[in-house]
Image (cartoon, rainbow, N blue to C red):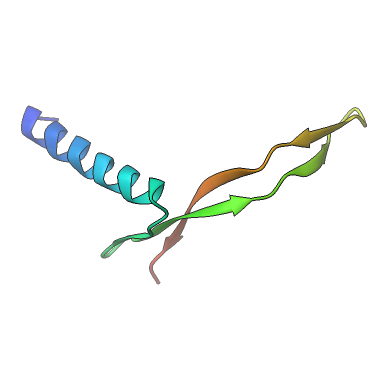
Length: 66
């Protein structure tokens, strides 16, 4: 990738990250939409039968265009 393309990719990535950090969805025409969704805490059962409490967290979801 050329230095100019790397700069453009870095700028786009930063803009998407900043918007998502503010809780705003990001629509990319021809591709889809990125958005942040909150996952509450939950209990996870491991294969050995032990349980672990997973903390709440925000996750990025992507929905492709049809």
